[in-house]
Length: 282
Image 1 (tube, helix red, strand yellow):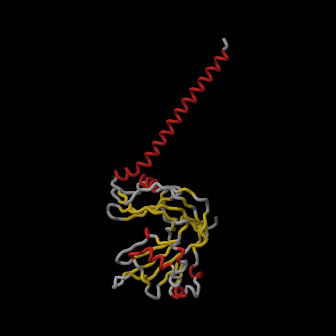
Image 2 (cartoon, rainbow, N blue to C red):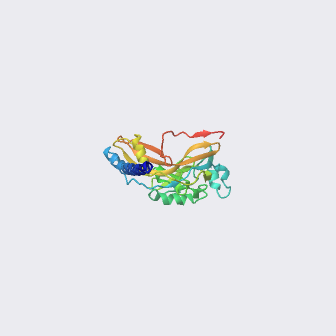
Image 3 (tube, rainbow, N blue to C red):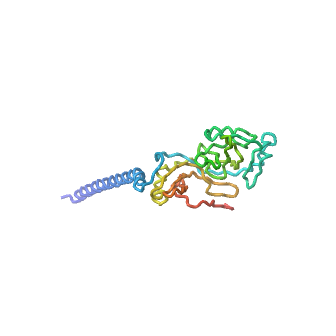
């Protein structure tokens, strides 16, 4: 009897069985992973519903793209042209790179056509410096009877900067003749905006809501009023700022108190500290 031949037969047989068992194990693990991921994608809406949490609209699973950006705050007064921006120079002052202006004449603003009126005002160099760099941002604007704050910001590839280092805020008040006028504005401006890394895929609304939910940042009985995406400053290195895409979630709790939650759109981590880290000697 050829025992060596028999040993090889048993070896090949057991080797084949091990491969077969491993393939079954791997297939089961893969299917379990798919089920888990599917449950996570589908479960957040049900979880919110179970906790009586409402959302005005639909929760998107779209993945946008964004960057880590660097930029520097500009010295606005140094940019003012004596002829082109003569009116702005005579009605403004700059402190800590923030320009504050009070118009010398009444400038009408139509709150019923906010975006159109904002764009028209931004085209007037006698009123605003570098107005063509700002887009109207409804998510951080406020309109009411006591006085409206209409906000614009710079953007990078259509994603606005939701940060005070890149912003124009128009103060608009209604007059007795039912028209509204701009009574003043504050302005900041960024220069040398550039990516620090290649474009990256961002987490979706559905994914960041799941993160907020499991971290207990969405109270039961609350309403998610709005979700919007913008660049937010997280680091200051000497004169340079570093910005990251952030999802902002406006939540109104059962007591009608509004809170803004922020989630890093690249890492899907909740931003709980509003302070900006500073590095003096990188």
